[in-house]
Image 1 (cartoon, rainbow, N blue to C red):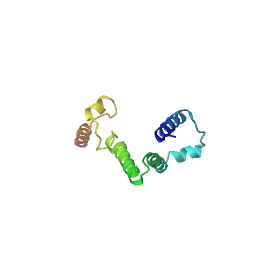
Image 2: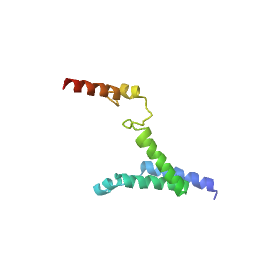
Image 3: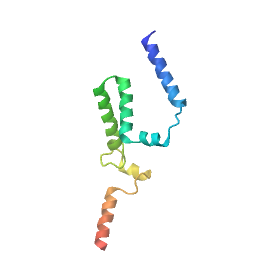
Image 4: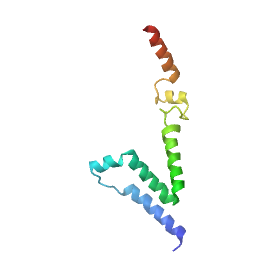
Length: 110
């Protein structure tokens, strides 16, 4: 059988299966799956299955966490979001400059 056709069919079946297949996890299993180390291992396994290379999979995992926890996290000081947009959309109440001014005003009041 043609490998390209086999890969295409397997990807299609995985997509359909992941959408309509549901697992009945116990509460302990749900709690275990929510642990960050278990989630990292599952994500690494997904990267490894698609690349078949441990080094590339680890690199992709690092890039994923760098983006998720630093660059695309509005609470990180290294985020790439525009501060005015975050305030305008309601993700942050006030800017850091406003908080600093408020802090110094409170100090003066004391």
